[in-house]
Length: 220
Ligand code: C5J
Image (cartoon, rainbow, N blue to C red; front, side):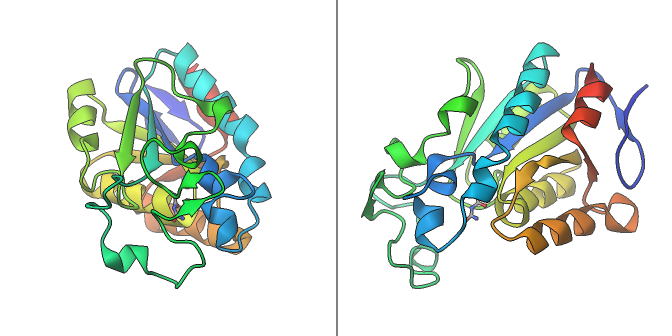
């Protein structure tokens, strides 16, 4: 069986059952003027990983393995946005408000879109998710079953929020998960470091981590 050189030990790659999940590489989290920036975050940390995420996506496409994209967003009537989420943190601009890139994190708005460089190809699955985890209130679980997927490689943002939440949901559902270390990022360097350590601790209690090059070498 093929292997990906990973931590805390090699990840046994089962050909034909692996998919890439790219979490929330949206303008609102990555661009100045977006929601992430409005919360006081340094979005340059996010834009810095875009070329690496692109390389990983292109490697999966070349290997003819599925690429699935997620977007954190809500319906325009806010019916899937609990007040507890909308009001959290007393932000200057809340989800659903009109910001510089349209209504914040609302489906179809310009700021909610995936970055142009990482845009899904026609036919690739795009999961619009109202939660931090991709399984909550979406078709993600059914889509994975339909595709026969058993192993997931993760990329995207932010490492300790939507990426880690989705990895934990997937781990509990029986998927083997690997996070591409250099294709994920946090607004907080220390949170990324801690999330990677937590994921691979105790014999890969949540999953494995590897660099993008290690993943691409393993699936080539
Ligand atoms: C956050 C995300 N951080 N995609 N969303 O609110 O991680």
